[in-house]
Length: 293
Length: 167
Image (cartoon, rainbow over all chains, first blue to last red; front, side, top):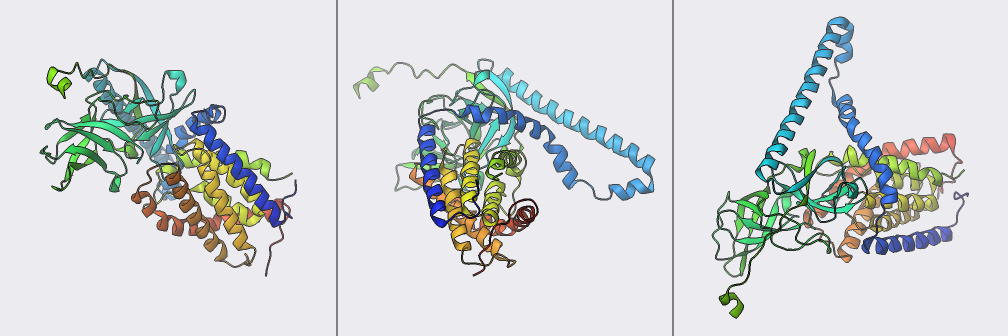
């Protein structure tokens, strides 16, 4: 196939054909069909690359004077390198241990939740979205809509799954919606992403509620919007989302909003839990007064 | 053999690098986007027909590994390639800064069409995401130069040379 001497007409034809295929794929994807046949084999490759990422980054950003130092005192430097490497490995192990300990403590705090431990193996290549790829998928009982948390708090929600990987929409993404509650005032609202500077926004908080800066925001456990229509009511109650840093209040409006600093540092996220099972909040029977309304 | 057949493994490799390494790198608030850069440079060197196919495949990979609806990035990238190669017909590419300008235009088109298509399909794209577009365009205009030179030299050495219009 020689495309080098193609005429402009051919380009337009190619464009129209490929655009039609792209639209068909969009429709196919919108109906919830999976492209696991393409993504599954790549997950293994991503895993492999992710494991070596630190080594690549270290080799790029590492000290430049290593070669000179080696020439000056090769044997001694070799020993120092060896010790530094060991030290680095020990630090990594310690860091890993701390992260696992935090996660373990988190599981002790909430033994009623069933979780699957997952490693973050990549980030979505489209910078318009805030999402990560984890190494657990449908084969590990991970389903679309399940909540994902770290030791510090809520991370996001599973958006797509394949057999051995899943895409997780982070809380900070503009399509994220989480039913939430203020820990002190007990007022409810919806926390959404898309705030400037990576902050979250809690909407629909009753104007009569007195929100204080520094107040903790947690998941309410109530049903609400979800990133995927077929997966509402997937957040257990009581998972920390973040802390109120600013309150936007206008007396002319019915509701106020709060700006929230997320509890999780999404840039440092390496390990997370997918909550596969939990007991949903039971709102209880309506009393007579509510029924009368 | 057409280079179309090497598009899939090359773009897959670039997707993995983008997802695992580059996704966390930010320069002046913008994240380098290897796939659009590579596709635009490829289209400038090899022509619109090949560029469109590379754009289609790269767009699919971008969407498969992000939460973006499938097909959106393909459409956006194909539009960018079509615009860049059409502009290129009337420009002599042997000038130093032309690939830079075309790369910038291509990235701007890709970003703009992506945002428009996402808005049309109901995705709430926020202003903060769009605010990085000018930085992204400038950054990628510079970043495309080494990629363009590498692809161009590979093209001259290993592949049939494409006739470049000089008028």
